[in-house]
Image 1 (tube, rainbow, N blue to C red):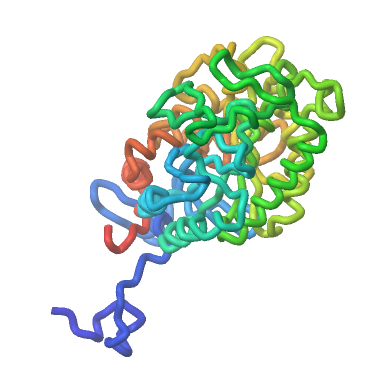
Image 2: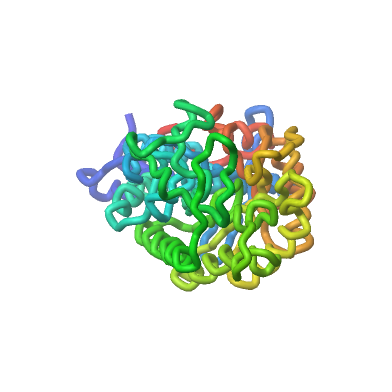
Length: 400
């Protein structure tokens, strides 16, 4: 039996106020581990901490380690509203101490959703459900950001478990008459035929990104990721193949990046200075004559100058004719090239599945953080396994 004087809780002076105290810094490295034996940093001054478990700071936000949860659509919202599923999903991931969690692609307008069950932040009523998710994640002392998107010509789809390529017509809540793109070419033969955005509509969508960023801040998110990848609206404007416009938003490189850079500039103006802004890019369209690495590096330099803190380096999803040579770590060289040549922080993502791979990427300075998606669904406690395999003793939630 423990005496009151032996309690570690700060409430031992008044036991009637005692309640469960959560760990203050889950995921933070506090020492080393080998063969089940633990040692503090002071006890092992000759050892160096694996980079995966070193803290990472951007602006005023410090992440406990460099293993992040990548944004993944959950297809579990109704009219854009987050549900109890999201509280359980993101809260459960937070219990296992990733460096940060990026919430799924969240639409800035009702017609900016990818599917009829994707999340949204286009009206003030959406804020409170987001705040609940943020509070659950923050209660476990994990940082959380949100990916903002307009789906463009890939919108009005069905959840993946209903159909990998199916379109939701208006009778079940779709918006096939409000699917937009830079031009009128559909993504594929199954997708809805997009309407070409007018310059006035482009300005309306820019304002929608701004308003969504303000709501994200009100909900308590620590950072924003602007989705400029995978063939969604901002990404499709970048592509010289998809974007066939002849106005100020098409044609030259400067014109094709204009929509994205105007979004970023306006969002940076309203999002708190101490909070980072990231941009996800498809650094290669994987189609001859399409958007590629050289243009991505050039764009990354511009994005850095207007306030972007990190480029999340993905590829593909822009053109249905793509030929992606998918294999483990195949996108990592893009993160390295953007980091080195644009002098900006990057995240490596895509088919990264082992602690050794993560540490190798970070040791080689190929990226600043590493983001995992499906691996966290398969193994929510991945960070714990990574700590064990890399010989690190980390803080765990008291309950675990």
